Amino acid sequence: MKKKKVQKTNVMRLLDKEKVTYDVHEYVWDEEHLDAITAADKTGEPHEKIFKTLVTTGDKTGITVACIPSKKELDLKALAKVSGNKKVEMLPMKDMENITGYIRGGCSPIGMKKHFPTYVATQAESMDTMIVSAGKRGMQVELAPNDLQRMTNAVFGDFTV
Image 1 (cartoon, rainbow, N blue to C red):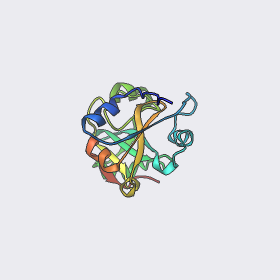
Image 2: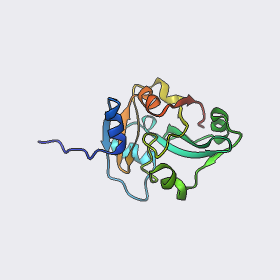
Image 3: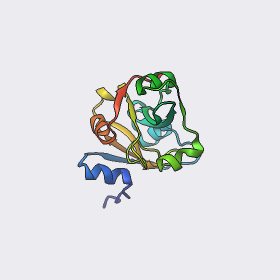
């Protein structure tokens, strides 16, 4: 049986351009369940392997991006410290697409409209691969944490609870 051709997202095109090896995970999504835990359940991947992308605003650096494991919560004070801010707050959802180019449930740390300081939870450092959004709802890419770090100039840090 012929394998269905995957519709490439900008994230995949950027990874291809940099010759980064990745796997694609697709799943059926719905408006009520756009979270990373649902993505893990629907792809059959372990929860700790799926990372959600959260966009914040720092009082000194402006927009910052955080990638954390699906079951973890973002510690805003710890992210502020890691990112050189006094205070960090979540970016209002209504501003997400305009600033990043992505919508809720399809926000990837790779390929945003501009390059923003990006922070990846330390849990990823010891993993062979991690999974982040491919920039489209229902589509994820699995890649090595050091490839994500290279693609986004990310800094690993401890900012989850």
